[in-house]
Structures are given as structure tokens and as C-alpha cells.
Image (cartoon, rainbow, N blue to C red; front, top):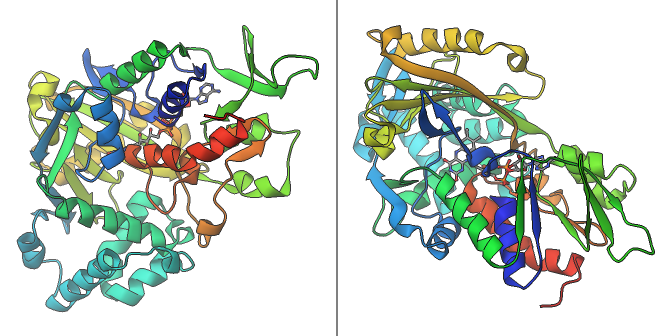
Length: 430
Ligand SMILES: Cc1cc2nc3c(=O)[nH]c(=O)nc-3n(C[C@H](O)[C@H](O)[C@H](O)COP(=O)(O)OP(=O)(O)OC[C@H]3O[C@@H](n4cnc5c(N)ncnc54)[C@H](O)[C@@H]3O)c2cc1C
């Protein structure tokens, strides 16, 4: 999303752009695959009514009529029971909380929603902030299991601004005019957006090369016409300028000769990855789109039942369920086999729905992505990786999105926010 939207903006200024994508398909983390012969997205994606930059892009690409909007339900699996948490009424009835807990939880959420600035929450770790506002009991029964599930045991490395951003996004979406309480999705999958992006870039004279990884970059000979070379296994591509839109470990690897104090934060970024089982089922597992889990023994982070957002007709009458597990780079889970992960998932699913049986599964697979969510440590707001890496060499990626979780609307906003700087680095005068 970052690379293609940036390429489109550059192409619109009359630049001849070439996009290099290593996979044989487009979309990166938002790309597609098939399961049981049915096309699906590798990971789950929804659109919020407040995803203004994304919705604008979709409109510019002529795809607005392909966006579906539906009301969805949210559940909690707590103390061995499934509970609805969709509306304020559900929240007030939630038996796992005392009246005092509810007031404190309501206060924490209201504090994040009313506070317009995240900066002052950027210097405090997430745990102490939540204990201060919600109390220890509520923290241990609700917040901590959710943090462990989403961010892993190192959740305290994240600043409180991260929880502010999560709550702020959720509340803004609920308040959105017209479509409040609804979530969107691309009918027939997100792949349409990337096909349209590609067509538009090509119609402006650009080129999108897929299935060939960039292996490195180097400065071109002084006598050459171009300033840089992009290396792939088969060919070197001369370029006046390069914008890297990849995770930081690749940028730093390719930059090995030009380490400079101003680039320090680029070397400090760490990522959470995701190991995500996806199952195609004969019947629904739960009535919820998102099921949050506060049971610390569950193997996965949550249950995302995409077919409860899109309707089962998107998957030929089947239900589609994602079971994500967020992990840091050192986790042993990366080395576990798909069948090990599947067995653990089955144990977790049976706790949620004891009547679930193996015969309900039409197909399953496990998708892995190592570089998904940059860790936002305390004070990260002052250490965001720079756009300028060298003359004619720019960097734009989700590592610069702070304090928000990574999602497509923010990826596009990030491109918009950095675009003028990119143009200056590439020495392009509009
Ligand atoms: C489990 C999960 C759930 C999500 N849910 C949502 C959601 O509900 N809503 C939402 O808006 N967003 C969601 N997202 C986030 C969304 O997918 C990301 O915002 C988006 O993919 C970030 O785009 P990007 O282009 O910056 O990064 P990426 O998608 O990671 O793109 C980087 C690209 O660089 C390519 N690349 C890497 N190395 C090379 C190389 N050497 N040569 C050439 N190409 C290379 C990769 O193949 C990839 O295509 C979710 C992500 C995950 C993983």
C-alpha cells in the first residue's frame, strides 16, 4: 500500500516510476491467497468509516461501489463464557466487572477519547498508565490479557500513547456520521484496489515489476547519467532517485556503507510479527466479527470471523475465521510447524465452542509475516525514522507511523505527510 500509493503520487507529477515488488502478486500484508480453492485475503482487513485517506483513494480509483458496510458484533471470551460487548448496554451488563470496575474502565476510555494529544502519554509505559486509570484489579482481569494477546509479554515496552491511539480510533469510528457502528470491506477482496493502483500507475507511464526481489542498491558511477542503481538478480536498474518502502532491516542492510548519526533510529526499530491460522468452515464459529479473549491460556490473540462482516456469500456460503498470534522476532513459535499451530488452535477453539468438530473445517492454512507492527517504545515520538537517507534516497514505511497501530489508512496518510520531503530528496520540482 505504501509503495504503490507513493508511486502513484510520483507518477501524477509526471515522474517515470518503476515499482519493484518481490512477490508475484501485489498487496504485501494486504495481499490474497486461496483456501480450499476459494480466494481469500491472507490476513483479515476491515475499513473504518473514519479511514478517510483510504476511502478517498478507493474513490479516486473508481471503486467506491465495491465497498460494503455492515453492522458487526463484538464478543469477549471471559471465564469460559462468550459475552456480547457490542453496545454500551452490553458493556454495562458485563458480569465480569463490578460497578466500580465499569466506572474506571469507562473513565480510562473517556480519558483517551477526550484527550486530543498523544504526546504527553508518550513517555509512560502502557501498563503503569492503565493501572493508574483503571486500577490493578481491572488491569489484571481485562487490560493485561488483552495487551499480552496483542503485544506479547513485552507490552510494557510500548508507550501509553499506543493505547490512546487504539481507543481514539475506535471511538472516532463510533462517532462517524452516517456509518457509525458499521465496518467496511472490499467486496470481492482488497486485491481489486491493488489491480486498480497498478493500472493507474501504468496509465501514467509507470512500470510495476512483480516477482523479482530487490537485492540491494548502490550509488552509480560519477560519470553515469543516473545517481543510483537498483539491483535485482537479473538486472540493474539505473535511477535518479529511490524511495525504499520496506521494513527497516532491509533498508539498513542495503545502506551498510552510509551509517550516520541521523539514521540511528532506523537501526533501532523492532517489529512484532504475526502467525495467523485461517480456517474455512461449514458453519459459523461465533456470531462476532471480533472476539476478544481474556483467558491467558488461549493460544491465539483473538478470533476474527471475517464472514460475520462480509457475509458468507463472499466465501461460497462458508465461514472464514482468522486466529492471529502476535509474536516478537525471538519467539519459538516461528519455528513450529503448521500442524503444531493447527493442533493448538483446535484446543483453543474447542474451549470457545465445545460443540465444534474437526469435520466442520473445509480447509485451513497458516500464514506468517515477520514484520508487521513496529514496536513503539516510550519516547518514540522523538525518534521516528527519517525520510532522508542520502541524496536521492528516501525512506517511507509503516515504521514512521506513530503512535497508531499499522493499518492502511495510516499508511496512506504517512505517504501524504512525507510526500513533499520525498520530492525534495529526489530533487523533483513540480
Ligand atoms: C493480521 C493483520 C491484520 C491487519 N488488519 C488490518 C485492518 O483491519 N485494516 C487495515 O487497514 N490494515 C490492516 N492491516 C495492516 C495492513 O495490512 C498494512 O497497513 C499494510 O499492509 C502496510 O502496507 P505497507 O505497504 O507499508 O507494508 P507491506 O504490506 O509490508 O508492504 C511491503 C512490500 O515490500 C515488498 N518487499 C519486501 N522486500 C522486498 C524486496 N527485497 N524487493 C521487492 N519488494 C520487497 C513486500 O513483498 C511487500 O509487498 C493488517 C495487517 C495484518 C498483518
